Length: 559
Image (cartoon, rainbow, N blue to C red):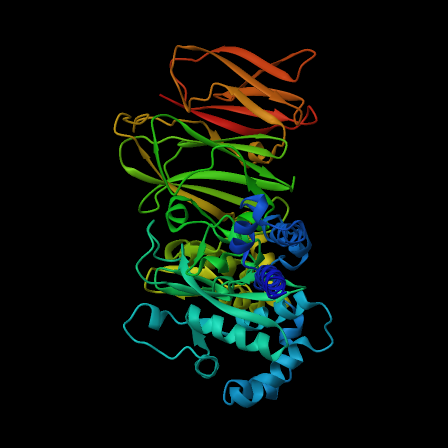
């Protein structure tokens, strides 16, 4: 009887401990789902199947999928458009929040989200208000001074570094009833040189919306630092950006705050190229041959990018370390929405590769212009428009005031105010009348590139690739097959070959004479064998869509 009792007791104990262990595992998975701890979820579903439960694997897999797959639902919030409610707040409340923030910030946060049921719009309204009202503290960043970064100090001073931005956003989210956190980590921001330090250098936020954690960097969305100047420029590039995309520029100190798995290591983070948040906002994705942060090449280096938006124009440049462009060192081929970039280097020095983008029909004004150009060309041109009565004095003043003058690096910076319609109309009008650059392109990612020890480069005396005009870059299905050399040798015979579904006719122009390329029926190939004359200034390929008007596409230089 005693033995039977003991056996029953042991069976009950084993059952109890097994049940307790099961509850413990279930609680661990539930907590990981709640915290967005993708690493714990990933480790659970990838272990020996005999140690997992189907129910918990399903729960972990579904949660992990939410963080590792592209979230298309947030694209409508990532449109670089500020929420108008941030300028509709009561004036007295706006003044008071900067003098007595502890007592008035709850009212301001409440006013910003009042009437909103969309959690994403709430989080965005708070983000937008900070971007519009807090300036990056370059005095602190570039000195040994250390100003407090709690939300009260930030509001009273109206300036902050990343820690202050993150603390203020976190406080405002809490006041608005949103769960959020501050994340400390490493970044590829201003001053990054390819390696992270021993201490964290940046802070940002995560906010929980509809049971998922979304990443937000208010600091980087408020503007940027150029030289030692903060330039206010609103963006949504780092608002609700997907976790993996965020990891190309931000690495949390705590791996579980990556909201992604398998975790990106510090070593991998430093190896990867800096891909800006705006790259993903443009709907782009890397395909074959993704560049590293440092690339050593033995010949032409190439990679592919795919675009979801057919209305994009992309371009590329190779630059020296002091930002001088190297003409003819990069090439771009486009087939539909697939872009293939080619880079080469002229010698053994270090260079940087850049990719730029813009939406074709959108006006995008030059963000920075040197003193000489602005003061001796743009301003005199605008003043002449006033003399000619094409603009008013008010429009001229609005144009002048839209540019920030910085004596330190002798540059003017364009400062856009989305809500100042008068200024925006004046700037647009003067740009159009003076035919100033309005097709400025955004840098979307960059990388270092250098010749490997056994490669000497293609040579400093020549262009590697031809020069291409914007009409060629905008063409969706036009490809130059040959020649791809940027310099043509006098006396040689060259076969010019293109394929195109954009243009119906092509012609070579040399010394004011046109020579048509012949279409190879039934294909879309155009071809012409041509003897390069002994003396010529340059040769260009022109294309026509209607058979009447021709536009320049590609230009070659003479050796």
